[in-house]
Image (cartoon, rainbow, N blue to C red; front, side):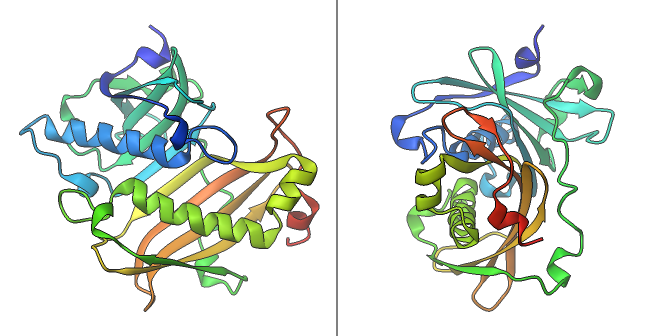
Length: 272
């Protein structure tokens, strides 16, 4: 049995052309939506009703491969046994027998009926961690970027009245894009050099349900810079500063033509 065959099937979909981003691959938002639908399927198998956005508190996603238009997608789910992530609900998103992305959910709502998979049998699909992000980042006086993200619309809510998980991620993506452009990852820079950034790992934590009409604001900071990778952290807040969700991510600087990582641009190294 290969890693892509572990667990039980919990979601199937395909990559639509309109779901692809500026790097011409499947947008992060739709990977996250697939994991959310898989988690809701698992939770609903007991009584046929999905708990919606509330099915997860924290989701940790690792990206290992790109997916493009018309790719078939399967999510299979299990529970991790042993190791650093013991007890977490694991989702493996595959296409053509190859795992492209994995996610860990806490809590694993309804995961009691899922098979357990030993961490030692999972190879490199488990997250490596977000240790580049310091625990006291938001208690420091580092510079930050604000993004006004607008009010939540009724069409963005799930059946429980809460902002859908992928819509939360969409707000974070806008804040990230604004932050990266301010730091130097502009359209002009990418057109001139062919270098952009790609997320390799991210962790999103929901602090409370987000209802329609709430006005949202993003707060972003550069957390760390390495040789070919860097880390950022983000908060989704109300305009009065109430914390709604957090996201941390590790990113690579990538040559879009060669599809390989390169050194972090000088404009980021100068900031550390």
